[in-house]
Length: 571
Image (cartoon, rainbow, N blue to C red; front, side, top):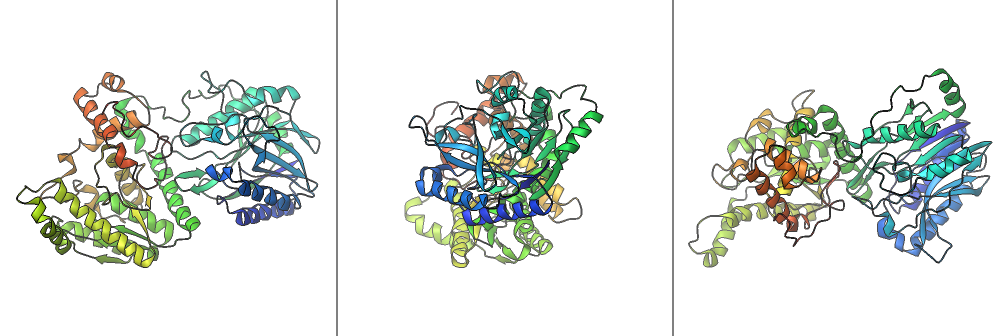
């Protein structure tokens, strides 16, 4: 049996385009003499559809698409993902289902049993968990068909009380197929391979694993679909961050299984699958900035930018170019994603901007080939101060005056954005968002945050990574001390701990969920720990007014992290 895997980029609710892509892959699989072609989780409607699932019309559109696609499933089997209505009155109205189509009919359906309800997932809000498990017979083979999370309940601290495969294995299947929408984070691809290997070794069956590709607002799906034989050896690994198509013969896998020796040892399974294995606080920065992680983050951010614009129907971006590291990296990534002619940089020097900052920003645009404009804000800023003078009186210069500069820039950027139909890219990094080091309606404005899930030390690593084949980001931008340049001789270190120290604490608190006692026990200064955690928790109100953030870590701000704004804990 020849099985095809179609790793495709879907658009949520774009039934016409999704159906067209699926049918195109079916026809290609037929031309390659495949017996069966597999698509990813909820491929019909795109993942995650969220509250669209509450509209009966949306579910009707899913069913209409299936009716169209099953006409193509004549001489070939097709496995697609789509919601299915629950015929029982009890429970939720829908299942998250994998459908097997053949001979122009629906010949089998498997319901997702393990419904994730953590981080970016909220499936129990919409779906009823599966409660019946049966292998599906197709062309003389018994298929154990599961959906994404159904294979993730192994290890010595399982999240769920049951494993569908524990039931299905008793029906003597010949192979496992799993259709997934497994999001990217820079620690997750290794976990994904481990969990697939743990399944094939436990159940003694090969697995065909089809994962989603593409970005849906903040969530990036990186693909990496694969086929693994029953010995835990990878037979085929598909591309990351790209659409791909592959065909693997089940007969060849069975022949290879007889030749290969089983793995002597199964790689240790990470109990906390979505959190980095790094425990040594002194190695955290080394881990966060490793070339492997930074390379994957770069690809994820480019895909996130490109898909956000393409799926929203926009083509052009605008950003404020300050001559600083964050705006420089954002501009370079956006250029890769959208094309140099579609990224417009606005340089807005103030009283306190250094001449080299303007020169650095100009050089960056020249290196990238972007259009750019220089719009000084001195007169606008002075006008604000003159207007406010009767109220401000003789009070000394302070945070209000600093923020007026930032909000002036935000207003100018949004004005140009409105006038020409650009999307404003936000350039704030995760370290700043954690600590509240940003101005609401100023440098926190934007339609999409590119670096909001990237710590400052990772931003520097991204800059160096982008420069590895020649200078794109001017060296002075990378080497000079970071500064908001909102007052004379200002440096970030005036308000924040050194980023190498700060990011270490933030990572342990945000990603690893370590409390103050645990952090102090690691040898981190107690005063520093309490200061940093207070900054994080006191600034939740700012983050709740922030734009969508492209998620690249296992715990990003936004839909995957829900804490009270008015909570007293550590604030």
